Length: 206
Image (cartoon, rainbow, N blue to C red):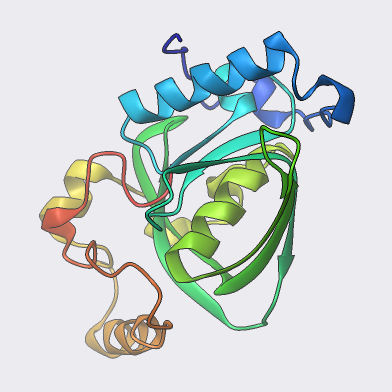
């Protein structure tokens, strides 16, 4: 296995619509080697997930750590379906945009349909943080970065985030309203990173 170089924002591969992996090629040496290398890379980067375009391969494969005790999931040709109109705003980061964070609103529950690396069907219902990770990573397969969905006022570098907090430009009423909205997330979400001092370098997502 190899640790692959991560494409940074501005590289054309990150704006390409990735092509599906034919069922007959899932077991191939090339696809399995790519999956192994992606797993090695996301572990080395301490990321929550990684999409193939981020390692310069425009195919529809993502690896995601849902923190569900089942290790890192491999999804081939995933489809994400929103299960609710309720959204949660979270700060997101990305290995392809190092040390940049921004607030993105996404549905709090989704269904993921995919194929795993053994060719078996995947059908998962995800909530909270896991739903955010799934949407973020699968966005990469369509050439979409989290900054395309971000509230631009919230974009910040990680050092400034830790120094000034997430919403330094808000007045007290706005901040209270934002806190109330974020407290409404379901119990399955991962809240251990709500304290910014405890957030890992590569952030919640990616």
